[in-house]
Image (cartoon, rainbow, N blue to C red; front, side):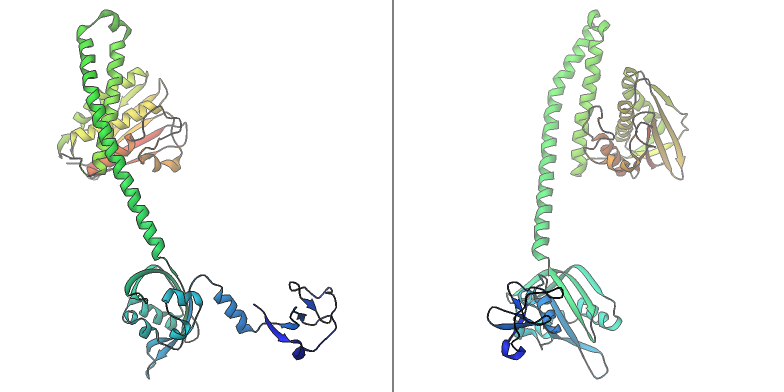
Length: 410
């Protein structure tokens, strides 16, 4: 923004081209070696006053800006704040003209401000000089269209016996964010419903397949038994059944419908069931499974769900370990809890991923052998429902991993 002065006020000097210490201002021409530029209209362009530069700067701001002076009583206590200056953005935000605001008191313009925490914070800014920053502050007032609640991000700093404030109306953005969250939640609900329906349909399909495999086992055809075809079908059917069951359980957990039947259970009995479930998979890959001696101890748990969680951990170790590798199970009591760990010498993972791999549909390592990435997530969620937890650690890719769970003793 420039201010012009008629040539008669500045004198008429002969024009000269700009030299080393001169500059062009658009298509204006200069008068004298250090003279003032002349506009096409025949006016000398004068340097702007400091107040003019301030006016240009604040009027070009997108965000509302205001200057406010403290109004004090005889004892020096702040009663209110007088509006000294507001820019055009502040006028649009407050839905008031500059004439309607400048010289008026804030609490006269916005009566709901008095007695609020925000008014006290403005007073504290003036008193202490400590800047104020408030994110997503809700403020209810009459902004020219009746009573409404708007959300602002606000900054304020002391200026003399008052303060300057810059704020941004975030109401529309917060509403869009709320709508986006609702849309994501709705999509999540639709996905859970789809997985639940899909799991039930798969489960219904698996029932006749299971019956067919049992019939083949009953026939005991020597040719099939020698080739191990029936045994292979049985193992794959068990794996598919576990996968479908996991999908159903994840949906139940996410919707709060998974029931836990807590009772006292012996840890040795639980581990025995886990070994019976997983030993065929260990043998198929020629791996070595070592179980450390387990001290007699009772747990407070749902035995079916605990077996499910530990089986998922053991099968995860089988899947991510090399053929012929070693897997180890150990348990120990720790101050009212029992910790059970499954260790392997397999693929391992980046230590930075120790939490990420428990996410839903996440794989522990890249290039994992099948699976949907729900096993570890299900393990953690089950253990949390049992008032326990789950964790993982590894020295890095290719250096094996240890997955642990813990839950209360009886």
